[in-house]
Length: 88
Image (cartoon, rainbow, N blue to C red; front, top):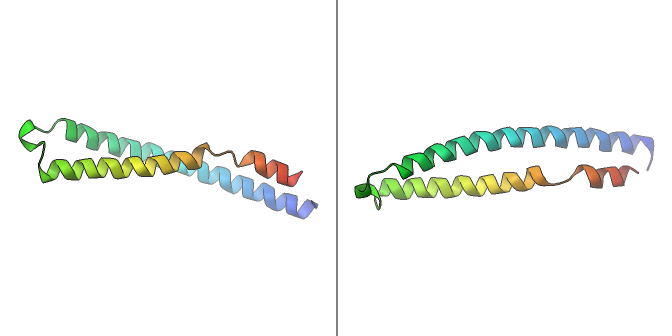
């Protein structure tokens, strides 16, 4: 691999690191929202346990959990190793 492509890979590694940091910040924000929604759901009176509000809260929690799982996949991947191998 020539020097120019190595520099391009290094720039991409830096961009990926920035994206991962942003994804981690987004994860933290989404976890806080999900936790608040879960607390709201957990504190509903029994009379509302099967209500539309409860179902909407459950759906929101599930949707946020799905997004959080996807973000976890992104932030836990090791992009640096394969990129280092490519630049070798």
